[in-house]
Image (cartoon, rainbow, N blue to C red; front, side, top):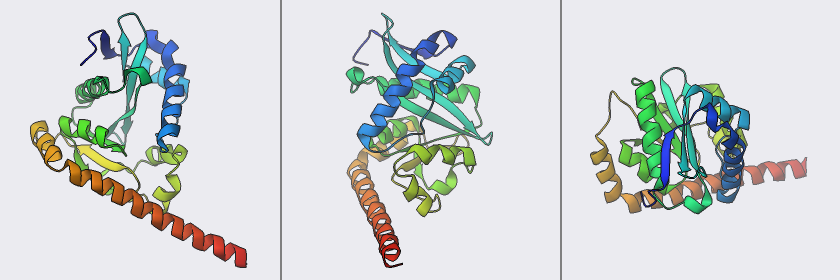
Length: 226
């Protein structure tokens, strides 16, 4: 990591005073991207810290740098959610270090669980590939209603529901401890096919959005005629 002044560790109850800063930055970042992770309250983040299910990055002087937390679904799926880095520390390598730390914590706490994530960003796909995640269909993710309800705060939620939760703007990625390639293999595959992944992301987003807008336009025309 470029900045050796940054410490990344498991969050504790002593870090709860950062919760509001973290949730505010999550919301701000989601609005800037035009997509969104599930909106979380400071109380929810504080609970994750108390349970030892979160990772925090701080400077040695105590300035907040980044954060990520663990969610468990159906007892057999784990999501490393809410990855966020303060704007002044982005592109420093800290996001990758946080992901590695939360991934290790997840494997320690839930060694049999499948670890998954949803992302619209090529950079996060790259980080996930480095850890051994593979792109999968939505059908291979959890069916837990609470997880999918968390997508309601995303601007693309209507698209997700119009596709019966089988597809959306995000790319699904999964690490299965019982059936997975080694990180070096998934990393090599990603590097060799990065341009293809980039084009597929753009095509997927264009096609889904175009179809969604067409369907809504037809509904609007029908209501105008009624």
